[in-house]
Length: 68
Image 1 (tube, rainbow, N blue to C red):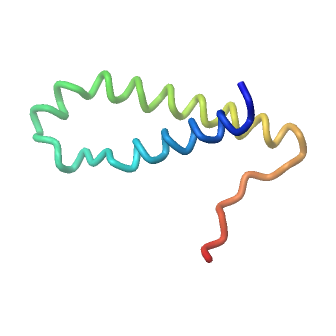
Image 2: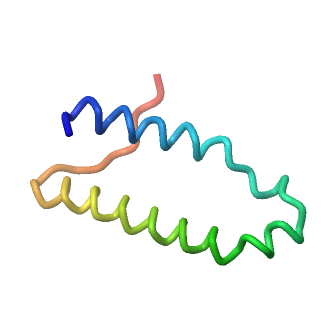
């Protein structure tokens, strides 16, 4: 996959996740979906860690962007 495509997919994922607000979910819904939500969060964390580790392994730093 081309670099631009990868970055576009990562940006789309960030936008999609920005729309998630579990505080608005009814308590019963959150409890029903907790297993699936937990699995997704763990998988997401593992993927992001793997990508960040790959960047660091090349001697680069993962930094927060400086606000304009």
